[in-house]
Length: 64
Image 1: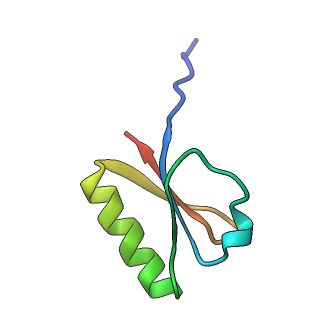
Image 2 (image 1 turned 30 degrees about the vertical axis):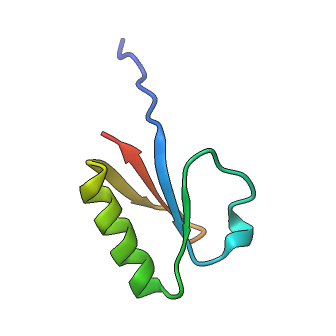
């Protein structure tokens, strides 16, 4: 049986601050989709994390 590994969310990047009500991770508010993707990509590299886009448009960066 595989063991489940949990990952910590290192950062959140969103276009709508109302989609992130409370987060223990730093939350970045982008002005448009292009800047949201750029911020997420840069954070992913700097934090050595994985970048995931959620269905609601929020992007999260998790630890590898």
